[in-house]
Amino acid sequence: MLEMEICKKLDIEKIRRDFPILKREVHGKQLVYLDNAATSQKPESVIQAISEYYRTYNANTHRGVHLLSEEATDKYEYAHRKVAKFINAKSYKEIIFVRNTTEAINLVAYSWGRANVSKGDTIVLSEMEHHSNIVPWQLLAKEKGANLEYIEVDDTGCLNLDSLDNILSRDVKLVSIAHMSNVLGTINPVELIIEKAHNAGALVMIDGAQSAAHMPIDMQKIGCDFYAFSGHKMAGPTGIGVLYGRKSLLEQMDPFLGGGDMILEVKLTESTWNDLPWKFEAGTPSIAQGIGLGAAIDYLTEIGMDAIHEYEQEIVSYAMSELLNIDGIEILGPSSELRGGLVSFSLKDVHPHDIASILDMEGVAIRAGHHCAQPLHDKYGLGASARASFYLYNTKDEVDLLINAINKAKGIFTF
Image (cartoon, rainbow, N blue to C red; front, side):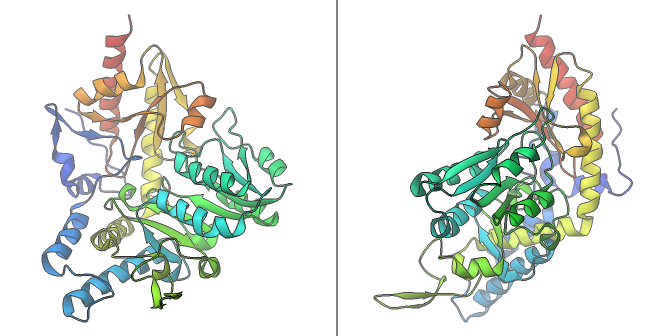
């Protein structure tokens, strides 16, 4: 019988008991969930927090003077403060709740981009970006007649910062970069990139979808202008995400959506806007989801983000060493010390979808496809890749089950 690996700093057995879905069997096998880069599982405390809202104080926020509305408002607003503390923002007023990272990036492209990007300006992305950090800027560039430039990814799966220096010699308005690649696992040197961009007079947006859940995030240390992440990737519910923005920038920006709650006063001919962050949260918000995100932050904070990051790097290092023992495996991205807790790979003569299908029958859930990063896969000459992504509840024993399942797939599809 496989023996569960226990990290010295994390009580993995206790953590796993906190996640009820990990008790599930799939196709008669114990679930091994390795698709955390797509979405994470939820601890009981988050599930209970959402259930408690619906069971005991379900009401709309900022609208009623009755007790239930006051309780819902307090909990929802307090969740903003929890997020601000979690990422060390200066104020909860810099924390805007959106649906997900995608909406956060679109908000910046719409509200900041339309007012500040002009014909001939340059927006800088990288070749490793998720579609969510490409398409909104393509739309803006097309509308405004702006240019898109891409920082190259080198042969090791890291950004070529020499190409960034060359691009920054032009009239750059914004650099928008992933903190961590959802395909390569690369943790980008965002502080250095931000310093270079600011010195060139450009603002910086960071896509933190793959980083906020897995490592300590400090807005004062990072120094970016905008930072976006999703609740569902960090043990929270779907339908809730976060845009951090510097207060001075958010105050200058027009609202993203118009309607209720984002207004201060409405006349037939004009309106004025509510204070931050409510100026950007039009209509009835995702109240239960916001409260659930607050509970997820409580859970992660109690465990410690440093400990989570250290443990995941241990897991991914072990996974990479074991994967490289399989003939025909090609791992995308840098060495384990330069990446977060995921590994994408291809197996000679076996399509990633076939790998994922066989693994599913063994109870192992991974991702197969282009992972919403087609330009990066095109660069590598791949139509798709297989991806195993880890979180705080995964174990080395589960990595062993992953390796065994891949070997089984290899035996089926290669002769």
